[in-house]
Amino acid sequence: MRQLTAANTPDPPYYAVIFTNQRTELDDDGYNKTAETIARLASDQPGYLGIESVRNPDGFGVTISYWKSLEDIKNWKANSTHQSVQKKGQEKWYDHYTVRVCKVEKQYSFHRSPDR
Amino acid sequence: MRQLTAANTPDPPYYAVIFTNQRTELDDDGYNKTAETIARLASDQPGYLGIESVRNPDGFGVTISYWKSLEDIKNWKANSTHQSVQKKGQEKWYDHYTVRVCKVEKQYSFHRSPDR
Image 1 (cartoon, rainbow over the protein chains, first blue to last red):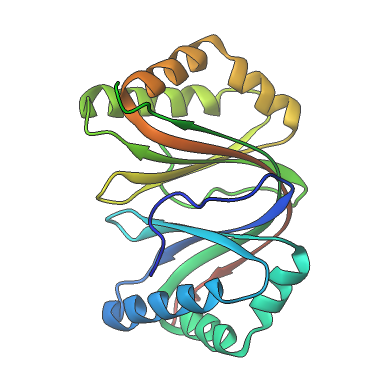
Image 2 (image 1 turned 60 degrees about the vertical axis):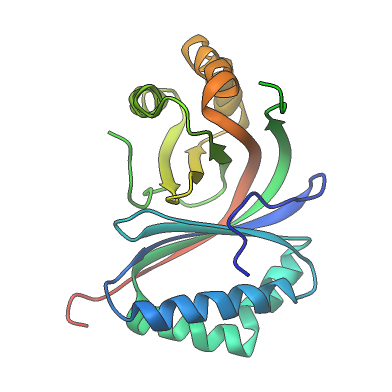
């Protein structure tokens, strides 16, 4: 359920939450299960536009979620299930993280043509 | 030289370029060397604030560079060495990519205390 390919977002403006994080070495199973659950829950929220999630072998990761409005982001942050996951993140899963809330102002894409 | 940990950015507002990409299976050596070179070159540009770069084992990656202003981003995109690398990216290295230019409006961080 975690979308591991490029999110298919609409024309800007819209919003992005960049979640840059360093995993501890604790509780991989619990973490992976919860990551699935929380990504699924996020995708059911109003204003959700997509998610991109990437992790290096050393545990450094970036997850970007895309949203229609700042209000949608605020509601998702306040979601009670998400709140309890944020708490566990601080207790167990993350050594450190930074959250950046951004307004996407411009986007463009490249796709290789099939005959190249 | 590629910064594989969290970028230490100033208080917002500032700008982010989210580069979401899918590598082809071509030319890993050339790609890795150029990625190093281009990250070093970026870090020497006016307005550069930091970079975060992450790739999944399947070749899906996200690189986020942070900049003081849109003008800095425009100048970096137009840099002649960077231009020739963008061309090679389309010819060889990327199956597809999306570039998103964003204004970072808010950020907050968590750091685990050493005694946890």
